[in-house]
Amino acid sequence: MFICNCNGIREREVRAAIEAGAERPVEIFRACGARPQCARCVCEMKQMIDDQAERLRYAAE
Image 1 (cartoon, rainbow, N blue to C red):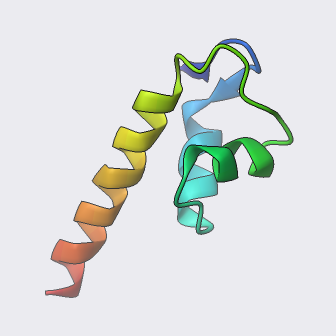
Image 2 (image 1 turned 45 degrees about the horizontal axis):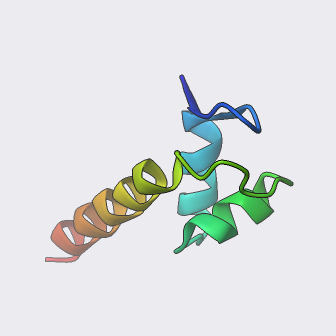
């Protein structure tokens, strides 16, 4: 599934960037060799970052 249609960034690429340490959408774009264009995907990227942080917090308990 595409998260960013403008740059053709797929969900698996976003997840890989987050797992590699991306904490902000701009870091995801950088990891994918892209730049934000219309920014419609930024909210979804932020949610994915928050979800990952939540999973890690529970895993640490």
